[in-house]
Length: 399
Image: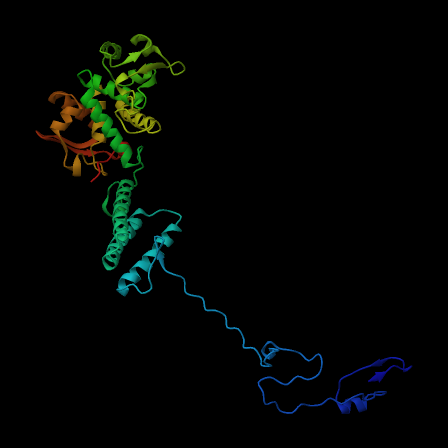
């Protein structure tokens, strides 16, 4: 200990004996004891206030130190695919490895910012095979059902990929953005065409085209609105006479005369009714699509028959009806007929009521309007290709 000059304040130091002897006014208060070698794992601590360590905790009843707690081991995360746990003991091992890898690949696909339908179709096909093998091993029916669902998903993704790439194998072709985007819409268009073919009240291509457009305009409730331009833009020979004939046979009902209908403008449309299309007592009509689908189908038909090159060429009603028909009878690349084999003349004659000479003229008009290329009329089929310009208006046949 070292005191100040007045001897009033003392300061305690810890130092060796030589330093203490060399320091003026220093006095030795106590000498520390150097412990001897320890024979236990931890040094013995004596005296009050001695530090305590977790390893030295003593149970009062036994006087022995408590063992250190061992943290529980965490189990590795369970592998999953389609919300199903993949058993760790699933055999064969190759099947389990395939399921684990597929689960990782599907999760990685969900993180993509852009879809890849070709990749998704491949993954679904692998999943279908893997789940079928899993079902064979476990005899679980739900797995086989899941395998079938994967097969359907693969087919749907493959078809969508072909539609977006123009049907080019490998997906290297240009993408086709269609006005009607899904197969259900294409089937609805074909159902309307079939209905008009079977129920048109008047003969001839002009009447058939007008009945088609009126059916699409009133399909959901049997009622709709028309303006004069809706009729004059169809290339009809005598639209006023056609309206008069349709109202005269009871197929169409309007609140004014045919001339007033043709003179009506968008700010004052004319209400029209097609009684045969009104829902029956059970609330169902001849078509299965709803009110939100109807304007999409009607808009598609309006785009087809009012195509700018058809308008410029002043195409006939028969030519416009033929354009709408062939647009629904192509494959994804625009080849006509199922599998690109052409449209049978017997079916074409039912859809488009033209004689042989009129049909040849309409095919020539569509070729000149950049609708058709390599068109050929044989005794049994109409073959050829729709041009790239009109591919967005097509409703491809499903394979």
